[in-house]
Image (tube, rainbow, N blue to C red):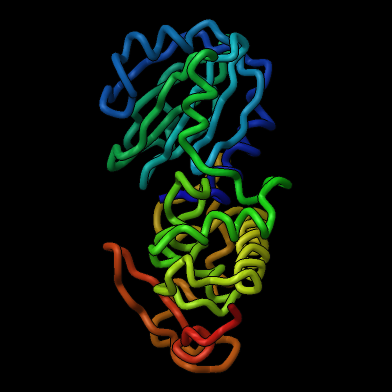
Length: 278
């Protein structure tokens, strides 16, 4: 599933071309990717101008001129394509929603597996909707001290806590695993056992990994493409995720794959042996 860097990359690409343009009409081809009745969703978006495109957590957020937000959760295989013409984008293999613009442009939401979800959030509901998510890890207000406060009460493995969108918004398995490698913390370490020194190191590592991934346009392992159809380049520099059996770039010990919480994690048995800084 696209994580914060992928959503941020897509949002930036769309924000370069969509603000000020008006949605003429909306054609919902696959109603299961729309939250609520398809007609109500289309009615909330049609006739509205796009004010700006941003991100909240793993979601791309289009702010409309009446302060409605169209939230796009890409699921596992969702893609957003821009172009011109009335029909679905010719690059689209599984079009789900087509937004036709007044200037002849077009935005196509394509989703092979249809695990994504598009939601029109009224202005009056936005604060409550956003409040269900934790803080943004790249925000200035997300300090090392705040990281420590999030970790301290929890008995959960630290990797599991990092994936909890109610605790920290936007972090998924790839970037949690990478941050823990940089911070030399075992993915199974109980969050509450991570002291101030290690929490500060994890805070730095997480922000560093996310920023570098955004600069690389995200990580493409299979389906992800940005708004221009390009693959993300961060996969070329992964240090732990997906590198089972390959030598750790720090100490040359083979990377180990472990599974818990229904998801794989990767760690260096030497660098992340549980005896790191507390």
